[in-house]
Length: 378
Image 1 (cartoon, one colour):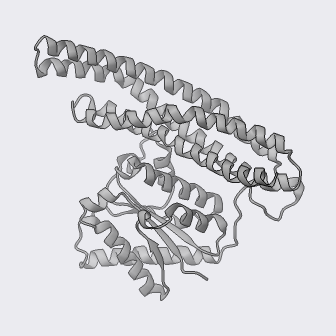
Image 2: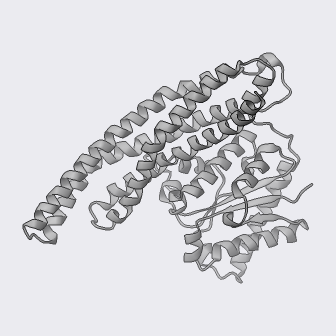
Image 3: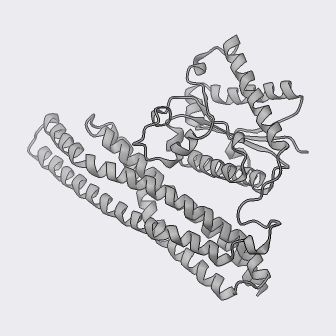
């Protein structure tokens, strides 16, 4: 059996701020694991130096004969990182589907209040999902001397927990993902169009959520534009910082309600998209088999593919614009104490929504992988 493989997911800027203590922790845990078990371990630290996505997806997608574990280093900045969120979302959801949740081992490195305080008003479904795993608090240990008994004991504890999780998973029966070929009575297996219908069930509410988000963002844009015009007029009159603060305070008050609405809608958007994504991947897993067995007509598949292409194409521009808006919001947060809470809320919500573009791009990529060979064969 191949050595267990692990993926250490972290924000590089956090590691820089900690003088590389985050990557040192990874190496210390790996060394302790090998000391405890006598087995080698493959610990991947740098996504830029390997085919990160393909490697960890293949490890967890295929079966349990090659164990893969995932350790996200949680900080406020982690949940704002598009790449880290993508990694955590994929691995946590796929591990849950496979029944190997013990191989997701989050480490809370810097306090994330919406995770630790169990804030019911939190609308980030990824933070909610992370909270369901058995995470380890490291907020105080990050200040401990690496040579201290406190630090070394805690590292040994992490390695022992990892060894136990891997041993438990190695003895488990392999689990096949929904939608993948498996031995079961044909009558109990959902048909292709059953899967299509399941995804379509979530589509209308998701589309309504997108529309509502657009309306709220239009309102935000109008309020912001008006405030910008007032600031320009104040500058032309030669008014000072006090006049600007008055405008900022009024804008913060006017944006309070829309920002809360956008936050709630963003959470709903992401939750529905996860439902659709699960069904979509099951469908795309099934299509080659359906076509080979002639249980689905090629023209039906092409109609389905065309609909998904239209959806991803129409969403690309809108979600891309949101990404640009997110980038513009961050400097504004520091401009006024009154504006900071609402702008932070808006930025976090729009970051969640903008991630949807990557999900839909993955659909388009898989469609091209399926459609290319199909058209070549034809």
